[in-house]
Length: 75
Image (cartoon, rainbow, N blue to C red; front, top):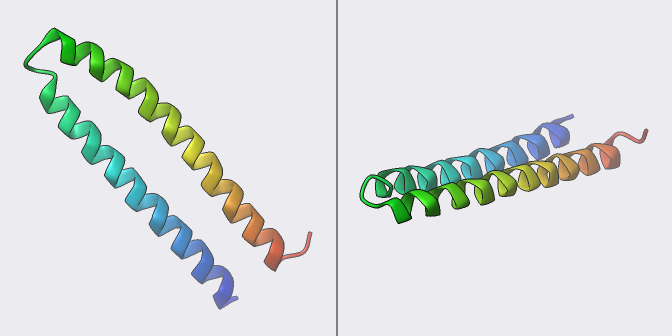
């Protein structure tokens, strides 16, 4: 049972750090948009890309956790 807890804990920690990194990136871009209209258009495009990335990354991480659980618990 400790093996399951370690694997899930490690994957969740990695996911949390990835979200913090993305949040920091968006914070920097949010500060930059106050200066020009070009930055606003750039920010809107980057937000769409970052949201798509978060969805793909979240799906990948859930797939990896499912794969580990399937390896440990044979369904």
